[in-house]
Length: 292
Ligand code: NDP
Image 1 (cartoon, rainbow, N blue to C red):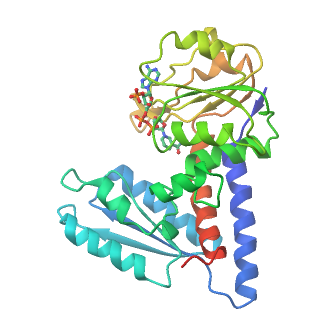
Image 2: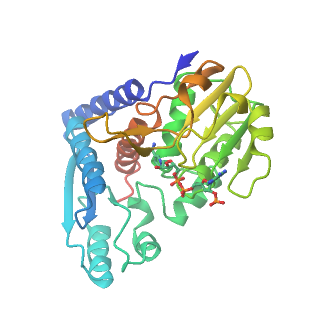
């Protein structure tokens, strides 16, 4: 069994980006610049945004954190988005989700200039991705494709079952894995909460991508020998024996499934760390494509 080590792979990707940025600097070029918009002071969002900003600093990007009050009106936030769209010193930006309930997330995401949409959530990017054109691919599925590619996991002609059909993980990864190219050419089945007899499907799968958010849902009796497992799930499970009072669990019962798997991502340390690395990669691409 080979562990698909997202921690190590994301480090390698960050080092590659860092090298490219130093070369840009040496040529006297402007380095990539990422901004993050954080509305309110939700603890988890603060942590995520904080590590995104730190990663920018690590690879040599310029970064800007824009913190806005939780009670900001939708129209003021839209004005802020408009300013960011017009800012020529900025290659890309993200609006950290979730937004407070009084703000329509869809409206905000649609207002982001697709050329700066390094999260890849705008329909223009989603459409370009589906048509195999240059696009910002959402960071989590982009990270999964990188793991499969870099570990040379065979995907061509394989049956991949994706469990989950969200717009940020399940749906895009199902499209990417069915496309031509490295880590693609798979025959993909997308399962969701209405799927009947899920275990019959997962038992036939050569590759399983779990993206539903129910801890340890996939058990050993649901998979065949040699299966490749990608576990996207991240759920905090209460555990008083742990100093934090919780532990992080994936959607896969890791210990028992790992015994049958040929490749498997751990949680934490698998898909999670890849997500930030791919956000940086998208920002670098934004700079290189000179879209701003
Ligand atoms: P969503 O809640 O948006 O989607 C969950 C999907 O799972 C839905 O399509 C839902 O079906 C499906 N589902 C729910 N219950 C079942 C079931 N019993 N059987 C089969 N399918 C089911 O989640 P996300 O895609 O946003 O996230 C999934 C998980 O991945 C979460 O734990 C999240 O925290 C984690 N995540 C991790 C990231 C990382 O960086 N590693 C990044 C993003 C997410 P239906 O459509 O019918 O409701």
